[in-house]
Amino acid sequence: MEKAISTISRTLEILDKYDLRPQKKYGQNFLVDPNIVEKIASLSADKDHISLEIGPGIGSLTEMLAKYSKKVIAFEIDDRLIPVLKDDLAHLDNVEIINQDFLNVDLNTLSFKDEIINVAANLPYYVTTPILFKLFESDLKIAKISVMVQKEVADRFKAKVNDEDYNALSVIVNYLYDVHVLTQVPASVFYPRPRVDSTVITFVPKVERDKEFEKKFFKLVKLSFTQRRKTLYNNLRTEYSSELVEDMLKQLDMKTSIRAQELSLDDFMKIYEVLNA
Ligand code: SAM
Image 1 (cartoon, rainbow, N blue to C red):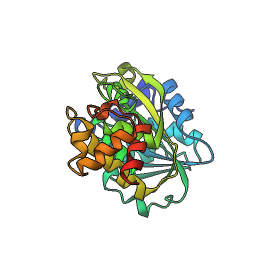
Image 2 (cartoon, rainbow, N blue to C red):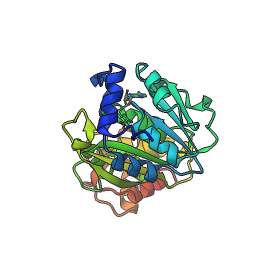
Image 3 (tube, rainbow, N blue to C red):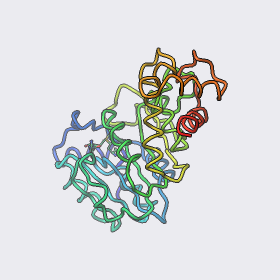
Image 4 (cartoon, rainbow, N blue to C red):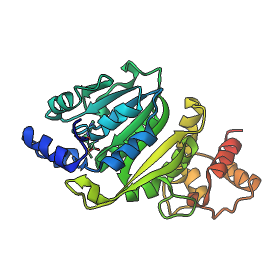
């Protein structure tokens, strides 16, 4: 049996065979540790569901996801890698490769839009946030999103009240998902080796989606954080009357000097309720 794609020898052999050099502009750092790849695949996928992979590269994670999923559908932006993926994974009958920038995919047209899916991605850092937001805002039936991010980005997603990194995104993500750290991944298991360590985090949905409510609630959260140094009162006053904001603060027993970064998700829910009563 052939060695896993994620062994360093097989990765180098594939790159050599196709005369490929990892492209910086696409953030190509390939995982070259079969144990870590198998761990990520086994924890992010399950046999009853499709895995949606974004950025399969030369197929190291795709190969393992195929073992742990009903089917893998992978979107890769770099057309040089499509023949490589089709060749490397030809022996697997549950893998579909699509050559497209995931940011341009119309998610409403996908064949699996009504099926429950798991998402797995090891992405370049500069597209992680837009891709996550595309998934967060979609109507896809996602059971779990597992994504490899720079360690600092993971910390931001897990920021708590009063942390320096705590912002509107933390509150919104906290409302929608339970965020867990799946595993830490040292820079040494990538080829080429990046400068920073990574973390695989998972987002597990925890609420029934209500688009109408979310639109208004997220707007309120973003408004509250508009100017970090300003008080909640001053940020809210740009949209609500002073009387209404003062009354809300009084009802909730909050000081006029309170700032958004001191407020938990629960506090924001209460504020929303009072302002929209
Ligand atoms: N999954 C492979 C692994 O773990 O070894 C490759 C990971 S590499 C960090 C990121 C991959 O995402 C590259 O293959 C890159 O070409 C692809 N990629 C980057 N931007 C993308 C986008 N917008 N849509 C789809 N794929 C993208």
